[in-house]
Image (cartoon, rainbow, N blue to C red):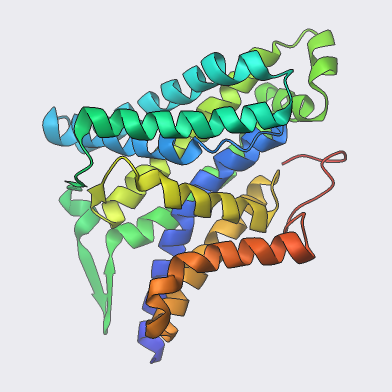
Amino acid sequence: MDLQIFIQQLINGASLGSMYALIAIGYTMVYGVLRLINFAHGDIMMVGAFLTYFAHQLWGMPFELAVVIGILGAMLVGILTDKIAYKPLRDAPKISLLITAIGISFFLENLFTVLFGSTPKAFKAPEYLTKIFQINDIYLPISVIIIPVVTVLILVAVLWILFKTKQGIAIRALAFDINTVKLMGINADKIIMIVFAIGSALAAIGGVFYAVSYPSIDPLMGIIVGLKAFAAAVLGGIGSVTGAVIGGFILGFTEILVVALFPELGGYKDAFAFFFLILVLLFKPTGIMGQDLERGRF
């Protein structure tokens, strides 16, 4: 592999890793607050991508407005999931919440399959996202440049919310002790709603980016992507927003470069995410940026 191809694959890996990172942030925030692995999170990504598809290609809305519709719809689904399915079980054993999350995942997948069919649908991105730049022998769609930049900006925005706003301080306080927060007069349910809204919005953005890069959507698209994003969150350190982004980039780079360097392993590229997950759980369960969750959050 020559240097130019290597650089091109690095950029592709950064783009793929960015999508994993956006979804992983939602996993890590919900876990940091509720100690819940929200396995329906990947399917909320699917909801955001589908709503964007309908708004843009079927209802004729401008792409930018369609993305807003997709984000708002995903936020609504995330909030309703918490209110209807998770909130009544907050005092129940954690296994009950986990099983409920898996049930919500199956429900969303089958609902969209029944309503819209299982056939993949072509996702048409606007021209400015599909243009290809050529630098010597490197061919780069503009989307693979935009996606990592947007991801880094979103990371900065999330960290600013968590550490510089009253709502962010409340989120971090809630992650330490929900009962004490309630005694201090903070509406814990409202703060949890904000966490689900932020996580769902990021998942929707990740879903749109994924649909732009791999222009096809289907009701099951969130399964493998969601699991990889979960692996990224664990790899980076579940409970750490920065760690989730780092884990996403690591998985993205690895998945692209392994296939580029060893084409014969292309059929096993999905396995590397879970291979990393197993290694992390064996040798460093807290992940790269992980910390004692009784001492710090996010």
